[in-house]
Length: 218
Image (tube, rainbow, N blue to C red; front, top):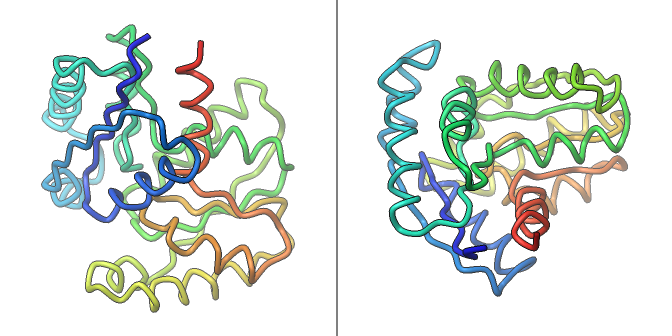
């Protein structure tokens, strides 16, 4: 199988966390980055995914195929249905950002807490999680919490404030079986969050790289 993995980003905030995860966990992987930062801007303007957004996601996957991708990983969690639709048309693996993290979380227990910083992504992510539960992974409940102000802080270059707000939110859920950091951009807070709570803390980039490494080996 072709070993090139194309990462498709809707915000520059996701680029460094996933590339760092590959460097740490799978440095041999051949990575290509595609960024369309208008996607996250336009996603904020609508409550549900439009036909045009479906088409744009499809076009990005087609572009990845045209540059000989062996697999595609999206790093923005607000386009799940469109990614599913595009994946159904392709033989190469096309992964949503959070599917690997959700699978890992369901192995941890039933009481799962998800911290998010980008509100438009939350409903779709909850639907993805609940679909896994319906498919029989295990009975579990996902409790979502929007960490107000964290995304704004990060976009303004204040990573320290971003991380502090996420840590504060995590401490309110120390009884969870696992805490999820919903977006790739939140991975920069992972170490601080894990140090602040007793339960496992999962991030999308680390889980996604682990899953891709398995997929690409077969």
